[in-house]
Amino acid sequence: MNDNKKHSSNHNSRDQHRINEAITAREVRLTGDNVNQGIYPIQEALRIADRAGLDLVEIAAEANPPVCRVIDYQKFIYQKKKKLKEQKSNSVKVVIKEIRFGPQTDDHDYNFKLKHARSFIGEGSKVKAYVFFRGRSILFKDQGEVLLLRFATDLEDIATVESMPSLEGKRMFMMLAPKKGTAPKKQQPKPQVEAQAADSDSK
Image 1 (tube, rainbow, N blue to C red):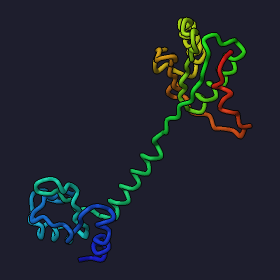
Image 2 (image 1 turned 120 degrees about the vertical axis):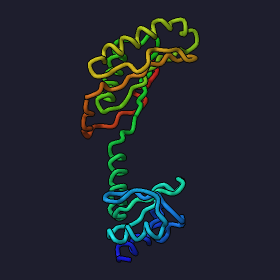
Image 3 (image 1 turned 135 degrees about the vertical axis):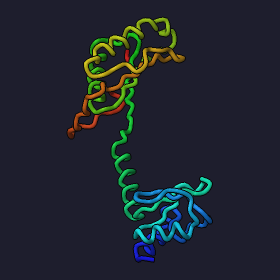
Image 4 (image 1 turned 90 degrees about the vertical axis):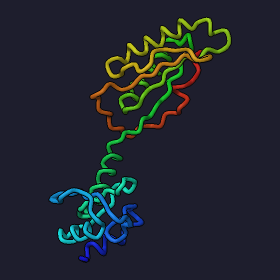
């Protein structure tokens, strides 16, 4: 057995793959480049891998018989880790910011929150806008819907509506997401804004 195979065998428990002599099946289904695929006794499969200067790696232990591939195990592990790293770097964490309105929000407060929403969406975050109805203000639910639709219209150049306004208890929600193809803006150092600023109750 070559040194590479001895070295690979030491990684069996850590990488969760049986390789070479650690494979316990009596026969295996062999795959790999430049290999005559088929079912072989384990000793014959090991000889084929050894002659190629490669490792015999069990890639589907639950199969009957187990599937083994003749490959360079170190390269296999490297490519696997590289793929996982790329998937992790490409995955985007979805951040949802909330914007709260009252049913009779005035223009000053509305524009203030619209500015915050543009900032959030520009950073790549979704925006969950909602109108909170306190007490008898639930009578103004139609006004709340009109306000949210106005909000969506004022943001239509950078955002799409994921869910139209819907009433849940004392709150009417609407979800907005950045338009596809719009790259998030790089955040610049700026004074910290209190979270309550964008979410404060409207008079």
